[in-house]
Length: 282
Length: 332
Image (cartoon, rainbow over all chains, first blue to last red; front, side, top):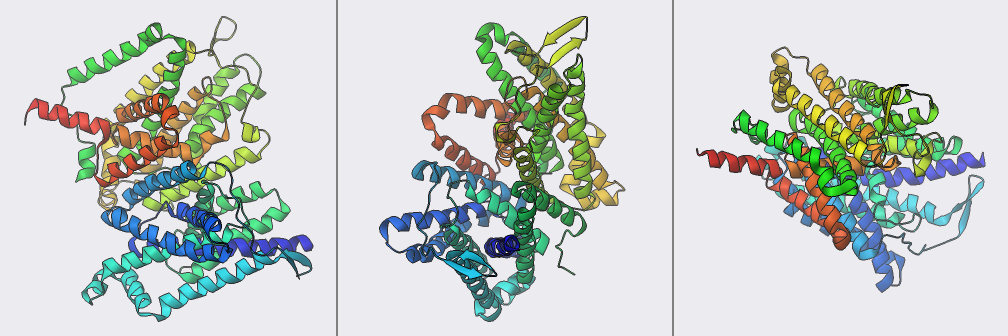
């Protein structure tokens, strides 16, 4: 019973993180049909941003705030320099961002060293919940990622830019004809997507060891979330993340974690065969 | 269409091509005499990489299918050779190992490809799903006991060619694997050239350039894509088998990074040329061999930047460059 409670809470943690990363991927993919293979590296950069800010600014919170701003800026530069030239050829974007991911990964390895890095944990205590003692920080993580998710949801649904973005996703030509600056929409979406990945990395940084390779695994999983959940839907991203993140955590409590991971990947491939547009799309 | 330009036929006369390839083959045959055993072992390794890259190009350059899980098939070939040799220690097990190195990846490619191609998974989707395949295989190879976990597969007898009882040639050291690799690479390159120049090859390119129109002409698109996918993955598996005597069977050869290498080699050598796979793998690997220790991580950054530039400026790689040069030389 206790084991199950921990598995559920762990699953919730993974679900929230994956949904943030996947949301960034999904809006970019939904808008322009391109996939940023360096998205996982943005996640990694977010975590390293906390490492750097830990050295100069005393509080963890500064890093948590700084990371999305910094990574959003990185995303903007990447969109302007590389991605915008390749919107017409999605497979080429895949290649260019693959090159970019190598550059970022090796750049971090070169400047920051290859070994694992750790950041300070802002609070350490445990809280008694569902019959188990669960780290307070993880509960905080679940809460703040949920808040971030809702904030993005609010932005997309109730602000002027949100409407413009959704209009551009629905029909780019008509949106442009109605006077929406679609090129600016591309930029905004890319900045938000990157910032979300950076934020996810920053919030995860106290509980996982940081290495230049940490993004690869998270990227692959969050892309599966996007496919399983369906492109361009918020509920899909959340449900997909729940299925993959939650499924993995709960399975891991029964069988060996590494077998559970393989099983989830296999499941995703089968789902894609029969529901290529996502489980939840009508 | 830049896509068709990539695979446009060379204007060079067949006689020149024949002479050049004959010279290259002769040079490869006498290479061990001139450069010694160690260098031959190294070249054999890079030729295996080249074969792997060529099989990737057959799929990506001609069929337009980007298979990020290509390394999974290379690894399947290598692991099945290692496992057969380890668990069947009787005479003639090598024959079984050699067959399994082709049959196991073939069967696997058929099943995986059936799910995806008949599920109409294409383009970017295919790339990412195949990425998941690579991750899954690597995860399994690390987790399972019979694959040796993180350390990889060790402690199996060498591959032995020949007729049991009368004549045996163990593929150990540097020279025997080298010559085996040269011969198999040459044969598979010829076979691949034959495939892309056949009417089947033209159909593959037609599907890449316009799947809807090709389907309206009555072609079974999914079936044809599945066929070329299976051929390409089987070749990757054979490359994996060749890797066993000269390399080390470890989970890395199943992983995403190894597939990425094939992509880099083909992009640099020239996509849609087949030979470009070998050229790219040899050039990049030798550069890394000579400069890698000096440049360290900077090496990968240079590769990454170069890769972005090739994509941004639609480069045809080394072979594309050579082709344009010879075309200008002919005079238009």
